[in-house]
Amino acid sequence: MATQIDKQLGDNVFLSTVDAAASWARANSLWPMPFATACCGIELMSTAASKHDLSRFGSEVMRFTPRQCDLMIVAGRVVMKMIPVLQRIWLQMPEPKWCISMGACACTGGVFDTYAVVQGIDRFLPVDIYIPGCPPRPEQLIKAIMDLQEKIKRTGTYDAREFKLRILPDGPSRFDEDELVRIRERNGLQLEAPKYDPIH
Image (tube, rainbow, N blue to C red; front, side, top):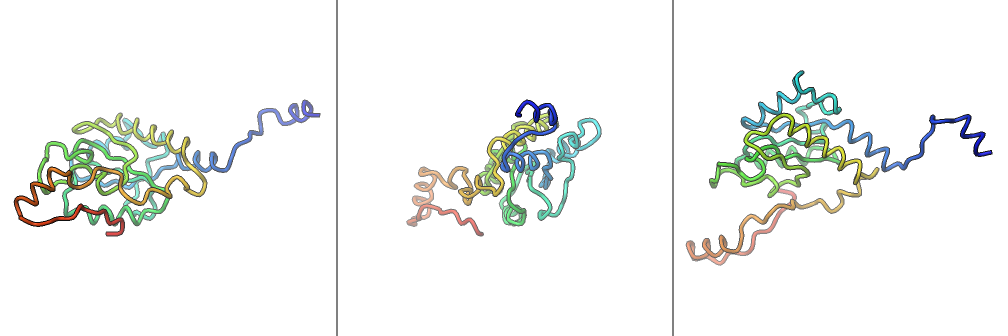
């Protein structure tokens, strides 16, 4: 009986799970929300051009409205005044969503080791993939998107259960203990340890 069914169906039927099917669809239709502020933005633009052709991976639909996107690409340095805007765009994106930190400035602040530049966006947003370089090549961004696709296929679920615990940024704390001691000594104040506020 089984052999007769196998002969009739052949390779026309395959079995899977709902989680795997949803993850496959999401991984192959990422819609990026570009947040490009500096020279990394030029490399991001060239990735979508004809030479590198990001559309081969289903990620060429760059929308500038966050409610239509599921992948934020932060390309370039981010200053403290931009953080409220960046977080608002992130909160407006529907779940499930992912984030790529592109370039040394977005990952660690790069050469801009100043009070005004964010020393890594993972202090404020959950980052899935980091791309090093100053600026990184378009091939590196394509590789990062391919790695993210593999991650989505491997860990994704139909109802986005993998994001239930992702309510706070998982980057380093804003101040280390030595910095707090220096601030206390300089100001003569008793400061409490900083606390993250996921809403504001």
